[in-house]
Length: 93
Image (cartoon, rainbow, N blue to C red; front, side, top):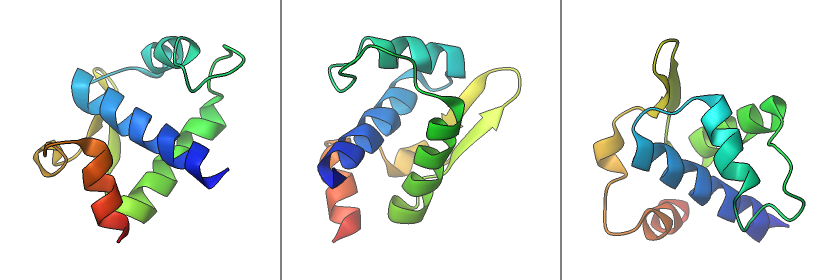
């Protein structure tokens, strides 16, 4: 179960980092097509907020919202290393 959440966190950070700014509607569209999503359903807004909070607590990555442009990663240069997954694993250790 923990691995599944970690993979979701990596997926979410990667997605937002790749897009720069992304709306919740766009996140849901991408989530519905993700290989991590077994049943093809949208990510509930509450789940997104829980994931966002967990990412902040575990990795220090702040996902903020611009009401016009959408969600973005504050200080995204800190995340832009070789691989987001490796960076997040190193942050955990």
